Length: 576
Image 1 (spheres, helix red, strand yellow):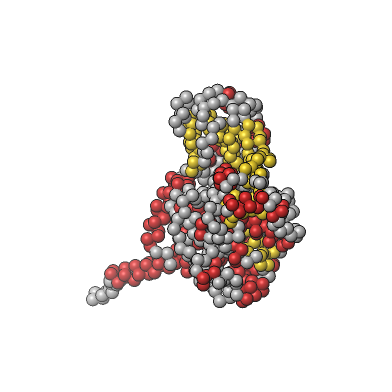
Image 2 (image 1 turned 30 degrees about the vertical axis):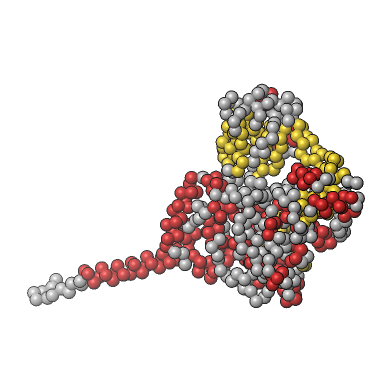
């Protein structure tokens, strides 16, 4: 008890609250700094970016392919690179001609050298052979940088990759995110909540539904886009920061029993004398690659083609160019894969293709005749050893060289030059036989002419058999193997339709794919992921969809007897 006159000291409330408030702010700020990387990883996304959605669609499909080709003890050939290898190297052709399981694991050069070399490590196994086909533009890129394609892809679809970058690089990236990107992520989450298929509209140009069972993109663009020609070749060298990633990959490959082959990117041939003079790599580049234990396959000039062979960048080849480029690569690969070398021999024959949407078939592989050469037909003076004119074909035929072709455009051009032909082989299958080839698929059917199919179709459900035997529009989806529960049928006399997501049809998450079939007297379409694949031929149009990979495995047209011609090979008749 205080006596009279004693004064109690009262601490000012303002002073106490300010100090406490200051400490609270420091604690909150420190907590935010500690939690920011985790919050950034959890919140940030670019689901509204079509470009990174395309990259994710590529890798998700290619990993399914890799897992399928992991069965058995045979070593695999894994193609590694950016979109130049994706569009320009044909893994399916390599596998079918050489007998090596092949995976085209190439994706997008914008991801950078480090990621393009790191991601394949997840699927490579001891005994595999890695074939590096890296774009020249990758080498000048600075080491340690996350570029404008890689960052949105990592933060959206491959967040685990930040752990592999190491704390210094990953934290630097996560702490330097602009505030506006957090707001932009709100739009990304809205896109994600709507549906994955929405993105397919924006990535239909680079179509993933026609990916081969080896990971190749089957793309064709009749209208070419303007693009800047390469001024020359930029060769890998120790002086570039990105060389660090080649060195790291070589160490990893040795430790894991993976052999590495190196081939040059299929780039557009330079159009300047200075650029053309650079088609021989300097000795220091060769020495650098060899010091890493890489076996070098071919020369840069052998993988370079004229501008007309590319469609929107100096690396993206048209299908006919992919075929001739890969044919050369196959000959170069044979000794490296333990196979006897085989050179092209005109006396064994020459297969001619047009400058269009060339398609592989069992009839045009010539796997049992590896000496048969391949050239593409041009109506102008040839500006590449793989190009040939109709008159040159006529001259070769007169010399007794066997000339083969299977494309109507080639037949027309050669006929105009006075060269006749006859069919020497073809493959015809019934609808039942064709269905038997696709035993874990989704079979889509659309009828354009409304005529019934009278041939045997007992491999289909009874309900679909009855529908095919009747006249009128028809759309159908039938599952095989694990998808036998799938059955959708529409016979609306005015217009039959089928519009579903793949995931809705198979009752599983599955890859993103939109299916839109329409059959009527006025309009017939078969849109898969917003691209119409209908070929406007009479009869029943059928597609086999691989639901696990999310690709179109096969297309066929069946006549009223339920028969389809899958391919037809012709041979020129030598003119006198």
